[in-house]
Length: 117
Image 1 (cartoon, rainbow, N blue to C red):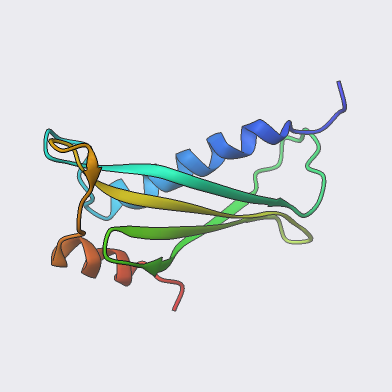
Image 2: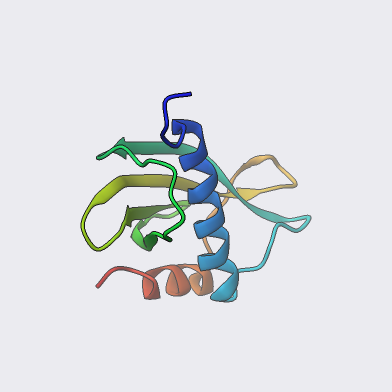
């Protein structure tokens, strides 16, 4: 209707990029004991993204790692324009207790290896 990508679609793009990043680096999917849940999404719509056939780049990296959570950062752009900057806060969950759980040393090392630095 407005000739541009709806704001809700960006969360789906972020989910797709996040899944590829984590799974391609050996992060395991949810199991009976440990899960990872989105607790916050922040999206800055920098420029209107119109429908187009040309692909865009989505840069994604781990911005910070805490005891139970980590922040994933994103930037969607082409060679001329940035369209979106965003962040997702993820929490490691103890699924048996349904409460936040500590990241293991292995998880922390993996996440830190995916920082922008």
